[in-house]
Each structure stands twice: as C-alpha cells, then as structure tokens.
Image (cartoon, rainbow, N blue to C red; front, side, top):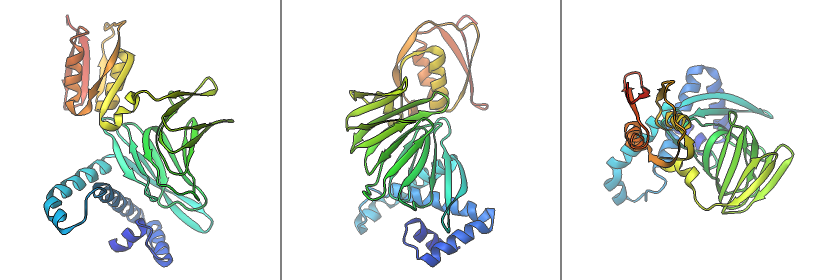
Length: 310
C-alpha cells in the first residue's frame, strides 16, 4: 500500500475507492494491519509535533533538526505503549478500532481522527475508531485523561468510562474513571458537558468539578488543579499513607516496589514530585520524614524498602 494513500485516508482526504482499498488491504493480512497501525502512530506524532510550528521556509530551515528530534521522541513514545487493533462494523463499512494502553512511568498524547487531542496518564487505556461514522463520536477511556474536543455541533463527542459517560460538542475537560476504584470524576475547563452514570445525569459548567459518589453527582468549584497535575509530569498526592504513596510511585515512575513487613508508618503525606527528577530523588526526599532504606535494582527495575536498622 502506498503511504500517500494511507496518509490521505488518515487525513479524511481519501476518495471512496481509496477508502475501500485501504480497508480491504488491512483485512488481507496481520502484517498489513500492523503496518497500518504503525503508520497511523507516525501520522499522529507528526501532526502533534508540528501543531504550533509556522510552515514558512525560514522557520522550516531554522527548526528542521529540532523538529525531527521532537517527532522522533513522540514516535518512540507512541511505539512504547501497548497497542491493539480490532474492527467495528457499521452498515456496510468495517472500521478499524484501536486500543492503546500507556505503561507505568509514562504519559502519552494522541490526535483522534476528528482533530480531538487526548492526553493519557500512566496506566490509562483508550479505545477509538479510525474514523467517526454515524451521528456520534464514541470513544472509551479507563484511567485518567485530559481532552480538547474538536467542535462539531452536529456530531456529539461521547466518552464512555467504566463508571459513567461524558457527552460534549466541543470543550476541554479532565476525566478520571477506573474499574478498580469505581471512581468517576470530571473537571470542566471550557464549554459544557453532560455527565451520566446509570440513571443519574447532570450538566456541568466551566470551572466546576463533578464526582459521582454515593449514587449522586456532587459538584464543587475547581479551586486548584492539583489532582490533574499528571498532565504536566507531576505526581501530586494528598493525605496518603506510606503504602498508598508507594503504589502511586509504581505508577508514576514505572518501577516495582516491595515493602518489608516490619515497615510501619501511621503518618500521612501530602506533596508533589516531578517525574523527570526520578524515583531516587523522590525516595531520598521522603527519607527526611520517615526512617527507611531502599535498594534499587536497575536491571530488574525493582526497589526494596527496608527499615533503617537493617
């Protein structure tokens, strides 16, 4: 398959004949589907990397090398996630669906076919189609995500999560929902959204956060975005026990942590760490408040927490 045909398909510029050609080609063999997914990732990376670059000859020459490095970095990150593909049948069309999971220690950004931008935190999963057909734009998210939804008044954008739905036309918002914790929280930055869980629903205004708790949506004014700092590479924690904090470190820094049984702490911790400073910096900072030692096996990517006296 010629790459220019694939890229016209990704950009919704392909003819009907080309669209059919691409879909039949992806179904012909697993190798074709794998190549399709790889090229789609590269296409997303290029669009995201060039989003704010002015395309003049002067700018191109000046930023060419740095731009290639940015694209390469995004491509490497995209290829590091767990990526799968399957199909959705809509009428007489077969639409490829993608499933992407961000590993611990990373975050990821991608561009959906309609121009919507999605930021995913570590451990989060998104499922989305190669193109949005029908009267709605449906995706699935489990975990933590920030979305800047491309406006389309005729085709609502719906985020399906394990514990509820968010329906929008075009807006910016954060959503958190996991199967394990059965939580569902939406923080609205711009626009308006309709949120629902089971038979309960509510409208959310900009500057408000809604959390589904005890069978009801409870709304509050957003005073800080501390819980959403993951988008900027910051791990924020509030009133966490030592064990809970180590669980958060595993997700944030992508490392397995084991804690000795004789480690006991009744303290609760509040603070934040930058992911780029690394796990060693975070643990050394905690040692000022809690008496423990740690051993980091970089080869196995594991950390053993022990009492100071050992």
